[in-house]
Image (cartoon, rainbow, N blue to C red):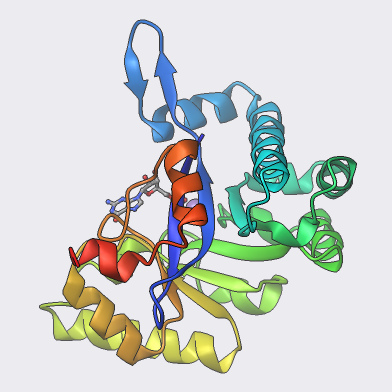
Length: 246
Ligand code: G
Ligand code: MN
């Protein structure tokens, strides 16, 4: 399990971390997540995978809690099919409470794939999770099926802007305008906005002025091991200072 910090764009402090699965195959070495996650989904293993990730996240949070660390919220990527499966919300809520960890520390990240999320069972599941304090994020907004149509139709707290909305804003005025007005729209709807895939310092200034709240990306930090994530939390690392080499 790897962890990528998400940074408050006003302060540079870490507000939460995204839990990301990485697989080191004994013979083939590191296998890209896109590859094995797609395979798992094809073979009907997605629910097992998601439950394993959630168990790992809770175990890690419990370990950090026992060490006396101040816990940060963690976001976990799930499949739309998980959210449609019966008992999923209850599984999450029970898993957190049985380990003595507040479920308010969990953020569920989902992406819209062919209107799967707009199914009644999914909306019910998201509402149950939300009433237990879990935050719901729409991942990859602006790419694929994760679009404006989802906003009214789903109970969402956080919108994560896809990297494709940001990667050209430094030198393309049309991309900049699209970003600015997207963020304005999302702010008008009171969502918390996280920009994904920040790779350049100039993007930070643009996002701050646009009214985007938080960001993650290689500029601040690649996904890191649990040991490194623990260092970030212990030392209350400021990633503005680290990334700019101060
Ligand atoms: O679908 P989702 O947005 O959850 O995907 C997260 C993936 O994006 C992870 O595999 C992570 O390693 C990758 N990622 C994180 N930050 C960056 C970045 O700044 N640039 C690029 N290209 N990929 C990133
Ligand atoms: Mn994600």
